Structure formats: C-alpha cells, structure tokens
Length: 92
Image (cartoon, rainbow, N blue to C red; front, side, top):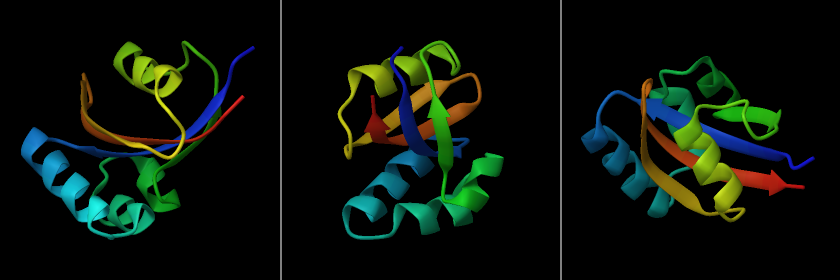
C-alpha cells in the first residue's frame, strides 16, 4: 500500500499562509516556521505528521500529498481546518 510522510503548517488565513510560504522560500526554516505559527499540535515537532496512507487525512490534503512530489512546498491548501503549507518528505 502507498504511504507518505509529510510536514505542514496550519494557519487561519490564506494571506498568512502565503506570507509564510514566501518566508520559507526565502530561506526561513520550515520547522521553525511551523513551531512558531502552526495551529496544529504537530507544530511542536516542526510540522511533522509522520507516516500515513491514503484516506487518513482530509481529501484536499490527501490529494496534494499523493499527487505531489517529495521536497516541494505546496499551498495554500484550504481544508475545513484552515490553510495549510505542505511538504511531502518521503513516499513509498
């Protein structure tokens, strides 16, 4: 069965998500940004969500992870929880 590992940052607005994306693209550490800004408990772990399989995350998130490439910063991705920045860290 397919699996992936990913990390994310969850914020409440698209504008904040875009601002964080720009900061990370300019060299800010993803893990530091997650620890400082993410509204998800995973922020304390640099946004790390661990390993999961298709169907374990909300559909919008699943689609981005399992159709995306490793090491690419994706977002904003809107879900019922807010806006996510997402990076796939491994797939198998």
